[in-house]
Length: 320
Image (cartoon, rainbow, N blue to C red):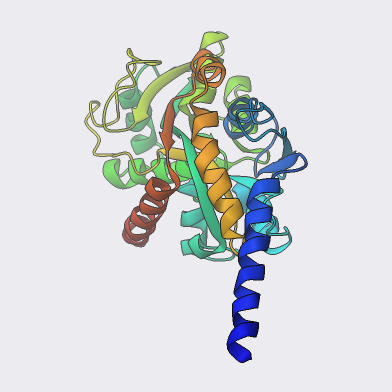
């Protein structure tokens, strides 16, 4: 009798799971962005989700929920602790941001709090200055900062985000002392501070900087990556080319994730479709027009990337 009951329960669970997979999603899906409107993550999230409602995609639209504050901490704390794990609220992730923040502490999440779905982009950090800056090269900035410790103010999107990590690496490599100023509102606010001259320079995303330079608002001195970005900034040297051993640790990976505990059928349904959504021709075209580098990765690839970044950042941050 117990075997019959157990078998019936298994069959019921399988039936319910199949029904969930077939019916999901049956209403619009929210995507939380832990930064303000207009910044790179918000800008790109709106593009990569634009075809979600297509019948050959998820068949339901996605809408953006901005949850800015403390370099992403506010939004990811909310996502880890308050969101129902039912597949109807996703979040954009930023790596190294949320992983570095969890390593440094003071937050309610770590890599085990979330399940990745897919990655859409890879956005290096860049060093920018206002158009009227006396710094024409990254060497000019480093020399001044070396001779005037703490006088060079640099805006960035928050503490222990990619921008901050790039600043810390540059300080460690050069011995110069910068005044890194995390701004409220993420990358968009940090870029506005640099354009307005509220700071002497900034470290921002390539995509934000590309659009600002296209508008004639800033100069870009260097890229924190292993090689130049030939697609968007072929004329801008890497920090390594400039003579500073600063690698790609600050490159910002972006994608979508769900809370831990989300039903596997929902995870499977999303991870099967979301990469196709990211690769859609309309999405790719608009990302290119916005100066936003793409790097589409599957759930399995993102899981491996998260694990690698976790181990790497533990060592890196201990050294910084």
